Amino acid sequence: MAVVFEKPKALSDVPFHYCPGCTHGIVHRLVAEVIDELGVEGQTVGVASVGCSVFAYNYFNCDMVQAAHGRAPAVATGLKRALPDNVIFTYQGDGDLAAIGMAETVHAATRGENITVIFINNAIYGMTGGQMAPTSLPGQVTQTSPYGRDVKYAGYPIRVCELLSTLSGTALAQRVTVDSVKNVNIAKKAIKKGFENQINKRGYSIIEVVSTCPTNWGLSPQEAIKWLRENMLEYYPLGVYKDVTAEGGDK
Amino acid sequence: MAEKVLMKGNEALAEAAIQCGCRHYFGYPITPQTEVAAYMSKRLPKEGGVFLQAESEIAAVNMVLGATSAGVRAMTSSSSPGISLKSEGVSYIGGSDLPALIINVQRGGPGLGGIQPSQSDYWQATKALGHGDFQLFVLAPSTIQEMVDFVSLAYEVGEKYRVPAMILSDGMLGQMMEPVEFPTKKEGGAEKPWATNGHQNKRKKNIINSLYIQPEELENLIRERYQRYEQIKANEQRAEEFMMEDAEYVVVAFGASSRVSRSAVMQARAEGIKAGLIRPITLWPFPEKFIKKSIPNTKKYLCVEMNMGQMVDDVKLVVNGEREVGFFGRTGGVIPTPAEVLDQIRKMAGKEN
Image 1: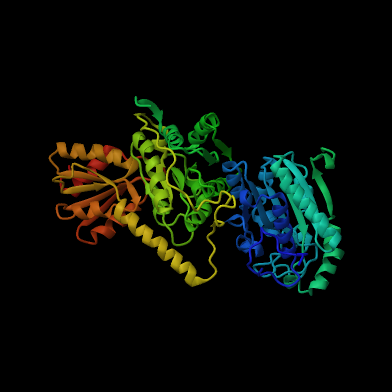
Image 2: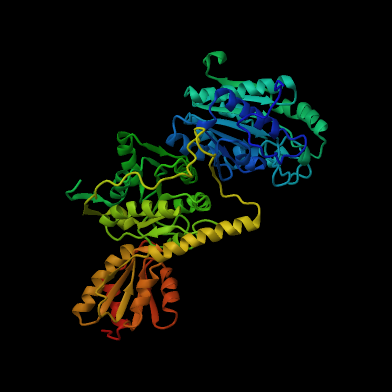
C-alpha cells in the first residue's frame, strides 16, 4: 500500500503535550519536514527554550540542548562556533525571544550568527498560564493585564521582524502564520529558506510564526484562528521584512 | 615552552587555557580581568580558535554552555559583579552535568564594590553560585605558576566528574607578574559521548537538559550527582602545608592572603612562635583532611581572609569546637600586611608586644 502521509523522520514517536488548537504542533512538523528534506538530521542540533515548547527536546530526533529562559541564541552561538558545519536552530516563544532574551536575540542577529530561529508569537505567556507578553496586543486581556493592555501604562507590543530587519547581520526576517493550507505552505517555504541560508552561511534567519493560544486566550480552536486573523495580523502584518537571497532581491 | 617566562597572572591564565586545548572563549570586559579577554582576542584567532566578545556576562556563560555541550573545551572569565550575572548559566551548566571553566578574578563587593583585590566571593564560589543543589570544583591559586597549573587540573577534574570548575583568583594575582613555566601541552581531554554535536545517524540522539518535571526523577538525578560530589571530596582535596611539622599556632589562608600569611608565619617563627600555615588549594571540596590532621598538635587557629570572614565557617565546621578558631580580615579591596597578620599571630600565641 502506498504511504500517502506519515510523520517526518525528524520527529520522535512521542505524543505532543500541546493543547487542542495550539499551532506548535504544525510548526514542529514543518521544521521536521524541512530537516528531512534537507537530509540534515544527523548534523542538526536544536535549542529548546523556556515556555510551552520547552519539551521540544523530546519531540525532535536530532541532538537537542535545553537553554535557560531567553538564552537560546547565546547557547546556539556557542554550539555554532564550536560546530560551524553543523545546523543549529532555536525554537523560541515571544516571552523568551522578545522580553527576557531580547539582548541575546538582537546581538545574535547583528553578529550575523549563522543560525535559524523559529519564533512563535502568540501574544501571551502560555506555559505560566497566560500573562501579558511583549507581543500582547493593545487592549488584550491577560492574567497580568486584567483590564486590557493599556499602552500608556504597559507600553506597546514589539514587532520583532521589523526591528531585526534593520540589522545588517540578518539574512532573513519573515513573518508567517499557519491558519490555512496556503499559509502553512508559505511558512514551510520560509522555514526551509531559513535552514538553507544557514547551510549557505548567509547569517541570522528568523521566521516569526503568528500563532494561537486557545487555552490562555479563552477561546475555542476555531475562535482562536478567527481572533488571530482579525486582531494579530493587523498589528503583525505577514510578509518578508528582509531577505538577502536573490529571491529577496539581494537587499 | 620549557623555559621560564615573565607573565601577568591574567595572561598566564589565558595562555594556559590555550595550551590545554581551549579554543572557545566567550567574555565581557570587566576590571580586573580584562587582560584575559584581551590576550584571548590576540591569540585565539592564530590558533584557529574562537574569541567572542558577548553582549553580556549572561550571554557569555550561555555561549560557554553551548560550546561545552558540543564537546569542546570552553571558558569564560569575569570579576565579581560579572560572576553574579553568570550565576544563572553556571547553575544550568551544573544542572546539565557539563564541564566548563569559569574564572573569577575577584574584586571588592557587594554591588559594584571596588576594583581592588578581594576574596569576598568565597561563599558565592563554594556555597551558592546560582540556584539549586549543586557544586563547582573550586581552585584557589596563590602564584602565577598555579594560575597556569590549575587550568589543566580544572579541565581534567571537571571533565572526569562532569562538573563546572572555577579558578577563584583575585585582582592581585591577576595583575601581578611572576616567572612561569608552561608544562607540556595536554590537549584533548576525556571522551565525551554525551556531547550534542550531531548524531550523524550513527548513535541515539543526545539531550543536554536540566529540566525534570517529576520530583522523584529530579531527586534521583541530584542524588546521583551528589555521589559524584562525594567522590570529588574523597579524591580531590588539595592543600599546602607550610611549617606545619611542629606548628601549634596555625594560620589558614588561601590565594593572595596566603602570600601575606606565609611571610607573617616566617617572621613569627623567627620570634620563636611555633606558627604554621595551611593553605587550602581546593576551596570546594574544602580540604577537611588537612585541617582535621592538624587538630591534635594545634593550640589555636587563625583564618586570614580578604573579606569579613567567609572561609572561617568551614574551618570551624571541621574543628568542631575542639580548638579556638580566630579570624582576621581586611575587606573592600584592602590587602592585609604581613605586620598586621604577625600581630594577630602574636596575640593568638599570647605574646603581645
